[in-house]
Image 1 (cartoon, rainbow, N blue to C red):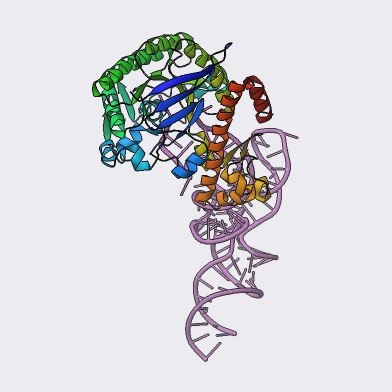
Image 2 (image 1 turned 30 degrees about the horizontal axis):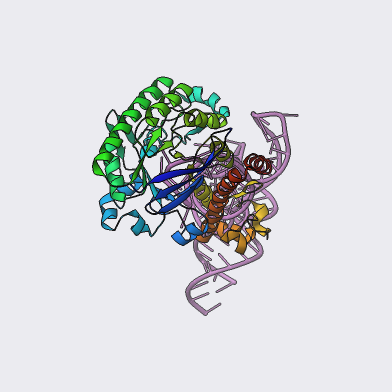
Length: 396
RNA sequence: GCGUCGGUGGUAGAGUGGUCAAUUACAAGAGACUGUAAAUCUCUCGCCUUCGGGCUACGUAGGUUCGAAUCCUACCCGGCGCA
């Protein structure tokens, strides 16, 4: 087995830790931010550009790559690493998130993050249930109708793992159901049992094949403390190489949810908080013992003109930046070193793709280095003051 | 000069007697985005407003009509054709 996780330092009065994951394609110094490369590309960036941001590893998506160009095709092309020319560690997500995004969330503008202020709306809207889902769940798997051509596809845990074997990432995930924060407790329980059963199936099938990849199980349980703990206990007892923490959260309560889970999960294995990436969430999650994170935000909001800065996000599309000759922020990324806000704002208004690329480079650099700095300060003992200073300036 | 077609909000371009402050697109202004259905989506976009409405507007000036961006007349401007 080429996979290992070594903890370099644990914070004695908390859950946080610093470590190193070793894979056949190199190391990941944790805590680390993982760039999202859904369709075998971090949108807008070449592998060299990605590397230059400090990113150590990329997570691709099983559902999307299965649809196009197909897992067999990728295998034929030498696997994900070779095809996309990424020599570092790679991960693949199982398609479990698409159960949510193409299922309960489809066409509803739903986020897996629920803010307290949204909960009032929830009761009013709850009856406009069941519109056009294009992912349908049954006890054995999920039927997806492809979002592009409408073709029908059926995923089971075994199928997801099989696809991930063909894709060939270093770290792969069990097939799970990411539930909507709007589901009832009754439904959350039912979904959790399903995810647990699927976790065992994923693991069983994976063990048979001996591919050398590391399989991570995924903890679910939504916003409910009992379910989160139950899930951490169940998944934590299975023989996974590491864990994902998935599902929906209450924004204001996310750090607690992470703490419930990480207090139970075996600490000698790495924990990946799936799909989380805002600064305040990352500080909380690192503090409560998460090692890995991924999030579409640096690239998605970047393509839409939103820029992370030490003083908070700015919308570069706004008028005020059209003649701002300062850099996006004061970091050492390629965009900040070479271009002004005004120029990049011009590119964005002109719909020139370089604008999206430059902001994506900056945003990934920003988040990646913020997490790196968390690692440094965990080692030096300055984490809490770094957290305090950073958040104070960011959310000023 | 004659004939002809046309002049609509930042732009393009609908509308051809009431339901028109005027479809739509773009531009503009703002907001959203957390395991990517996303270079996407939402809102605003004449002026004023106690958000009920009020006022000024479809080249200009008159006119017909209960009512005109829409019909008539003159003028101004532009395209095209003929001299």
